[in-house]
Structures are given as structure tokens and as C-alpha cells.
Image (cartoon, rainbow, N blue to C red):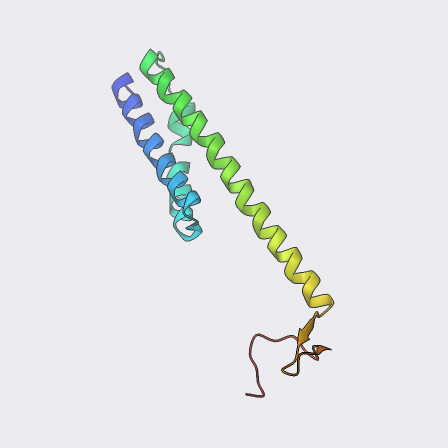
Length: 119
């Protein structure tokens, strides 16, 4: 592989990471899986590049590393939020909270449901 081809590959990979970053920020996880599959195609060529690394390549590599770090942090943040949400839901399911009745007094909920079957 020539240096120009490798540099072009680095640019494409950088654009891919920028797209991933955009999807992570806009909370579009359904669009991430195709990007992950696309990223896997770059692993082997990057590992097997035998040529000299130029200054421009080093700049692209630094940009890629920064994007990878940011995307990792965004992924961890999203996973942490999901975990916190699941814990909250689980704890609410274990001990049903009290609800207010129409006569302004509290009463315990008999069952917790998203659908009011009595309606």
C-alpha cells in the first residue's frame, strides 16, 4: 500500500469517526452498528501498513485518537445513563409508590401498569 492510499484511508476513517460522534451526540444508537462494522474493515490495513508515517499522517492519527477518546466517553456516558434509568425503574417496580386519588388523599397503588385496563 502506498503512502497516499494509506493517508486517504486515514481520512475516510476519521470521517467515519466524526459520523459516529454525531450519532452518539444526537442519541441515534440504531445508526451505530453499521459504523462499527465499517470500522472493523480498517483494523487490518492499519496494523499491516509497512511504509513510513508522514507528518500529515501523524496529524490524522492524533485526530483519530482524539475522536476515539471522545466517542468512548460518550458511549460510557450513554451506558451509564441507561444503567441509572434501569436501576430507577427496577427500584420503582419493587416498591410501588403512592399516587394521589381524585379526592386529594394519598392511597397506595394496587398494581403498577402503563395501561389503565379499567378505563
